[in-house]
Length: 151
Image (cartoon, rainbow, N blue to C red; front, side, top):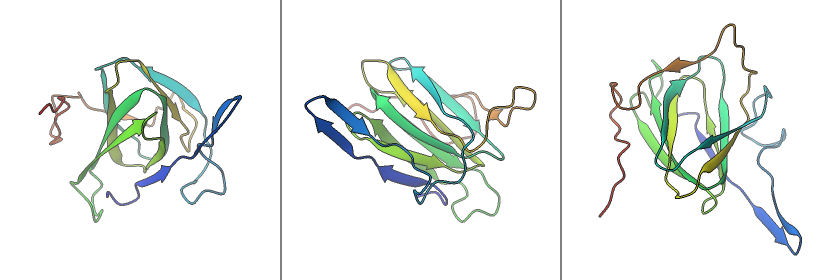
């Protein structure tokens, strides 16, 4: 696993009224700081990648649908520099993924339905000075292929 990346399985608590899932608590081992909470969606087959932050860590949970998340460590001096990780998150695998600053990340919706993702970054978004570096999902030096693997 890439240094600093943490995966927390989420517990779904169902009852006759519905279900509840805690995503992130300030007393969790992976909690760093609170910046903001936002929800984003991704349509089936769409890739949202690649981006990284210099200051901010992300805490990502997919609460509807399924996504394939890929990470790439470009941090100089990191013991896992150059490593790739892949995770599946969503209704069939509820988990919170902690992505540290400096790690490129992105995801692809692999479910038929739209994926709904909750992110709790450690910093609020600053539109005047965005803490974000982006790469094209396909045309870059990252050795990762977003194509679906059938077999």
